Length: 336
Image (tube, rainbow, N blue to C red; front, side, top):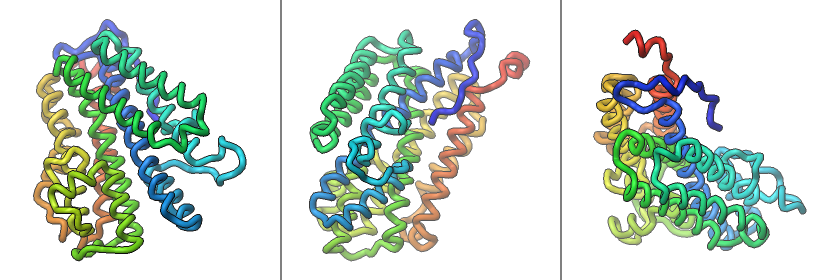
């Protein structure tokens, strides 16, 4: 969940930057929307894979989904409120559910509507109302590929509208920053949980049950077609690992996301005269690490541990962003 914010006198504004509360809201709006899109895609993929498996295998898949999304799912029971898909899609007590995330994104954008285009607000509000409407026929929605695809499409449309209708200044950079900090963390968590089950990805192609698991990982990252165009449709786990971790061009690779975090922080640093601050240094070091590491080295040292270190660094970046740009002391800024 989003931590408590410190709100400052709105009359105070940095000479070269926007209000901290505005930057904070744009950053969190973007993180929540990215979280909703990721959850919708992963649940959709796991539901489709579950159709081809036994009940025992399906139970294991729900445990994997719970770990990958960092959500505690209840035991299944007769009530729809105890259905794992309900918890991930429509539960208001789960603050990372699709509904809760989109509602939080909408609320954050509502506070700073003057900073965004009317088209952005209309699209996010439309997405929120569509999810609410789907919840009125929840028994159908939680088993519907169309519902989860519509959430992904709605989030992608919002991103496109944002890029097309909003000035690419400091506010836009905070939106990019939120999106890619969230993406780095969720991708690293998903891939790490996969490596808990398959710690040593082989170079040769795989078949049988493992084949479906690696396909599921690619599809959970929205990467199946992009991988096939790069490496053909032959499923080689080592190549998949390299593609999802180190590819510099694919938007849902860890390296791509970290490079976008680094780029946004550099621009924000220039706009706010904070180029040498901690988040930029951490992101730059992480970017360099991903740029020069080989997949064989990652596997040799343990992919799960490597991804855990990426998540740890991502958490440090997030904390530093809050300290430097959102929760800074007004007095120290005035003195500086």
